Length: 184
Image 1 (cartoon, one colour):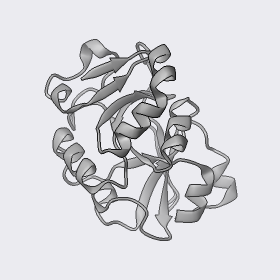
Image 2: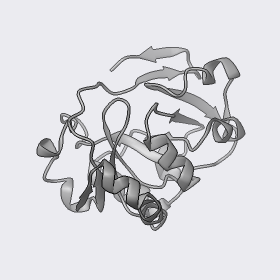
Image 3: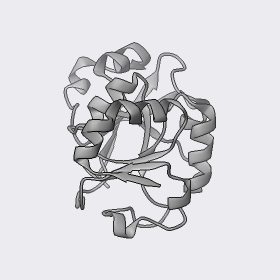
Image 4: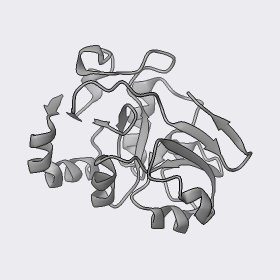
């Protein structure tokens, strides 16, 4: 696994976007915690990520490339979109299929977010959503710095964008399909 600090990331952003388009799995910072993901439209990469996380029965969320992408693909009101960018994941009904089936396990809903963080510009440059899930084996503590990256995950990660220790909490889930709010 290659690790890039923020200065290296700035120099290599276009190369790293191309690597994600080629199906690579990567770790990245957000406005809350570190995420692990891949191109959410790449069936093989998403299936590989599911195996890495040992997450077989719960859907993944995505970082959307833009609010326009969310409007085009999801049933969401303008007022709800005002929460983004920010530390929220909106669970919304889909208008059409827009991610690999393995992302949301064929459900008619999808968790979408746009962090208030440079990773959103990375996703916009990719032009596709990226899977966003915490860096941990399902049920384990999530990664806060590179020293506590689970050794069982590390071999499957192609690269990491690292910006130091993150002491945030996972994003708040707002289920617009059912009206539930879950703080984690």
